[in-house]
Image 1 (spheres, rainbow, N blue to C red):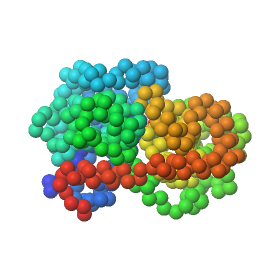
Image 2 (cartoon, rainbow, N blue to C red):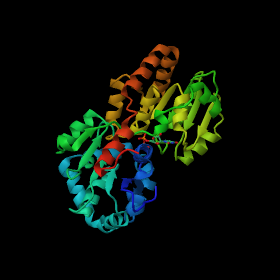
Image 3 (cartoon, rainbow, N blue to C red):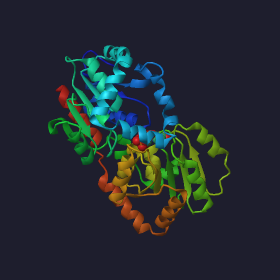
Amino acid sequence: MPQSPNCPHILFLFSDTGGGHRSAAEAIIEAIHLEYGGHISTDMVDIFKQYAPQPLSRVPELYPLFVRFPQAWGLGYRLSNGHHRARFISASAYPYVRHRIHALVNHHPSNLIVSVHPLANAPVLRALGKRRPPFIIMVTDLVTTHALWYHRGADLCLVPTDTAYQRALACGLKPSQLQVVGLPVAERFCQMKGNPLETRIRLGLPTDQPIILLVGGGEGMGPLEKTALSIEEARLPVTLVIITGRNKELKKRLDRHEWVIPTLVYGFVHEMPDFMQAADILITKAGPGTISEAFIAGLPMILYSRLPGQEDGNVTYVTAHGAGVWAPKPEKIVAALRYWLENPEQRYKASEAARRLARPQAARSVAHLLVAQLGVKSG
Ligand code: UDP
């Protein structure tokens, strides 16, 4: 929303490294506008694309390539994940990014700044100096959260789970700086219209077969293709809906394949809530955004891959609560699918467990907490 001289302005710092940071920021912005109408203006800045020097500005573009090497990613994550190491990394990078981060701060005068990206916190707080608006961190990883999220200078740090809360304490934040709110999810997931049957008809999906939704995060990551081909080979009596996100190469390959079971392939979709409502089972990478959305949709999950480090805890969280299973190999995925198809009562149990973990109020709670910092009344 454009900035008006009469409205308090909130700046959101994010980056398209995966889809989760953007989804969380957009969900909060939507909740602010739903709760406070036009009384508050907002904007979003991609810290890498818009304000990092070359070659860092290419990080969002290169991110899908980095995560294609999960072992190397996991090693980098572990080596950097400590309070002192995080401070050292931020301090070493600052001279290199300082000029651009000062430009960001000068171009976007705001009454409140919200960071939904761990790499924004230290440089932006440093560039802002002492006379600054309130700075709030919304952690968008669910369980295993990197030390870079937890900057002690933040006025408030909002976390999605109790485990993230404990991690924040271990990184030196005070209880008064912390609040557990859940992960903000778009209103469209929380206020579903119609029922699964109507949604299937609207999406042109069959109504007489279980629908299996396959998703690999915003970038179509993990062995989506291998998984889909194994389900096809097993000739399971299902319709496959594969969402490849921004992975255009994968979409092309899957489009060329002659499927022997009913299969629909989509690129990046904006109707994820509809697809989740229409589906019976979700097969997904353990991304925090997708998992939190599936909790709200009550969709049982088969987690087929995870980013080592930041997504490890998501797997434990889902499986320990009975909302899904971990099946890192195509044959395990097929076995889990077959079990749920043959034992629908077990699938319903997982669906109920997923619903119990849902936090549909998260985005609105965050909106209230942010706006409380501005002293604006609900409109
Ligand atoms: N998403 C979407 N359309 C797509 C693929 C993904 O809107 O075609 C959204 C999905 O609903 C979720 C986000 O992108 O909100 C992915 O976030 P997640 O944390 O699951 O994974 P990431 O992409 O950050 O690794």
